Amino acid sequence: MSADELESIPLAQPVVGERERELVDQVLRSGQLSLGPMIDRFEDAWAERIGCARAVACSSGTAGLHMCLHALGLGPGDEVVTSSFSFVASANAVKFTGAEPVFAEVDEQTFNMDPDAVEAAITPNTKAILIVDIFGYPAEVPALRAIAERHGLGVVEDACQTIDGDHDGKMLGTHGHPAVYGFYANKQLTTAEGGVVLTDDERLADLLKSLSNQGRSDDGAWLVHSRLGFNYRMSDVHAAIGVAQLERLDELMAGRARAAAWYQERVAEIDGVTPMYEGPQKRSWFVYAPRLDPDVDRDAVIGALEPLGIAAKPYLPCIHLQPYYRDADGYVPGSFPVTEAISSSTIALPFFPRMTERQVDRVCESLAGAIASTRAVTSAG
Image (cartoon, rainbow, N blue to C red; front, side, top):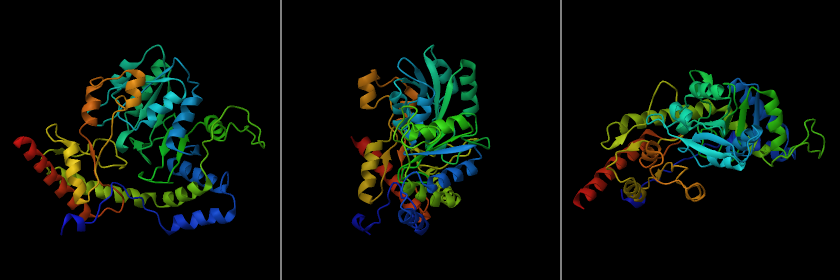
């Protein structure tokens, strides 16, 4: 079969079916597309699943992070310690408050912040730690919380890639600080766009509900706004998709875990690739992004996979080396060697709940061939 005839395997593929359509249609027929009962249903379902007091829906994970950081009272001159190995929204949410993100080096295995590096990054201007659980693997939450408590710092957790995750069996969102999920189309659960904040703090939840709705007064009075807020509402249409997805989240997570197991077994046999880390904590499988050896040209491998119909991407870039952060804050290569080494070597491969074993076989066989061919070209050159 020629490359033109091969089935294309996308990087991600959401699972959306009749139940999602049914609930969306229910909302559309109700005439209440926003601030309706489907939002309550979505929030209640999340709080029940996680075992936290409250869940507050919002328009995106970024919005949830911004509101939580805003609720800490951050402003110009303040600093927040966080990870550069994350989607840019983590640091952007800090910037939105007027504060500055201060990056801490990450652990070479987990890709999450090294607690010792976090402690070293704290200054008299530090006001909070923004924990990031990257690639679905939970960060060292107890250790980071202990650091925050010693220094009197606020804590917010970016769990946008670690939906339904836990640390030592304790669900993220129940550790004493808010945790934020994001529901973009490639996530473990999608609402197309959306997010939720999980918290045991009733007062914080009430504040977030107000902030997400333009600072609406706490008693919900019509067009009375008691504080400066944002337009960060989730619509009932998006919530309907989320309710349907949440009903079968176990099925979706099992599909991802199954595909990940196939990958881990096969990738371990490919020369030039290191499988994803499996440590003491359970990974909430979001992406499959193994590391390539330093002598493997990642861009050339991605280029070799493309004509074979296999999507692959460099994933993910360091935040501190993004053009905006280099221009605004003067970061240069070499600032965080471990973070940069990971960022330059991880490759996102096709990964989704209904991926078949045959598709995984084809990706891995093609990956092995691409690595061999690009190495051959490099050696010849």
